Length: 249
Image (cartoon, rainbow, N blue to C red; front, top):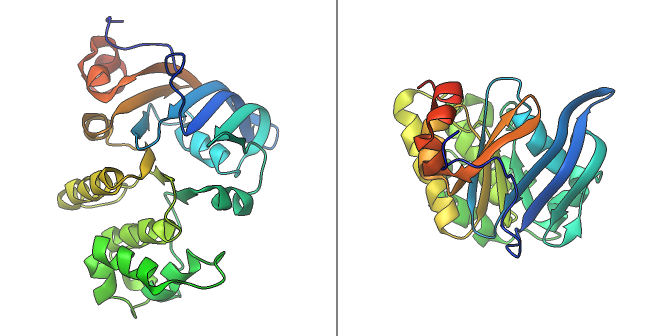
């Protein structure tokens, strides 16, 4: 390993993250997928998790959001421990999550999908929907259209928009470029960049590892459900061992 990429998966002492995962063990039923996983996201930071297929990347995100079987460790968000809590409770803490698959209500309109994203509010401020329309103008044009009739890229925008309806402090994205045409991938990454630039912390799992690491602040490489490397995205890109083993050279 070069001197650039680090195996230490935690922030330097004294640097607190808005999200801190420590020694997390989790899986599905009796199947343990994650072992002693550590991960941090600072306030306003853009962090990417990469690694081979089956490494447990999506399981980390699902575990933060309460969608797996908790087996040990801690997940702390904004100084509150949230491990082993239900997703409905975690949403109230300020975390938005966009899964890779089945992430829109196909039979509902675009606007109805956005309204569903704010279902925990007693009253839906119209400006919340307008904020999403300002980020994704195509959604305003398609407001009355059924979500299932949208293109793949438009559905991904809708899923992200719905997750942003509660103005979360942390937005978690699972493979946001999956299934998109190549010319739409860059546009999707650009939109994520702007969401982060506007102050929302981002934690993303992404198959397009090189592009994700090029854009993020820090990256984690996960292998067999365990931490392998953590460093700045550009440092991971430049590390010979990481590049040969996980980025295709």
